[in-house]
Structure formats: structure tokens, C-alpha cells
Image (cartoon, rainbow, N blue to C red; front, side, top):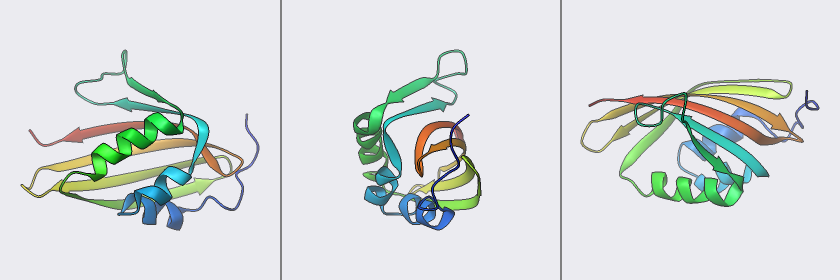
Length: 120
């Protein structure tokens, strides 16, 4: 079990990052963070796994280059864990919903598991 989260990690900073400031969002990840993504193409037995801030940063660049909005619906931070719900919408109306569970270490995201679904 990790140490308690540093007060530097908070839901409002996460919200600002997710909702349009990807540089802030990337700064919340530890250098060696692991990010797992589960969806209809990367199912639970074979999730997509990103290792380290560099890989996570490339994924964020791709996501935030798209014509879409992001909104944090809920965020809970408790000790060395956090969870949040995010809703997104592409310009063409397609919606995406994701749920993330985070493990924090020294005020940074050390592990994230994201489960997402979107309109077909």
C-alpha cells in the first residue's frame, strides 16, 4: 500500500486538466505511471497499457487534438486513491463515457485504469 496522497493532488486540478488543459493533466502523472485502458477494442484480458509519462503524453496529444469536449462529472479523492467519471462529446454528436480509478503516490498518479464506452 502506498503513502497518503500529497495535498498537491486535488479534484479541481484534475478537472482543469481534463476539461481542456492537457499540459496540467500530464503534470499529474508520475514519471513511471502505468495507464490501462479497457473498452470494446482492448478488452479486460488484453487491455491497452501505456508505460510512463512520455507514452501517456502521446496519447493525450492524440485525444486533445480531436474536435471534442471533455467534462468531469464526478471526482472523489480519498487518501492514496481517487476516482472520476468523464463525459465527452465529438463535434458530430458521438458521446463517450469513461470511469477511471487512480492510485496516487507522492501526490501524482502512479496507476490508472480507465474503462470507456462510446456511441456506435
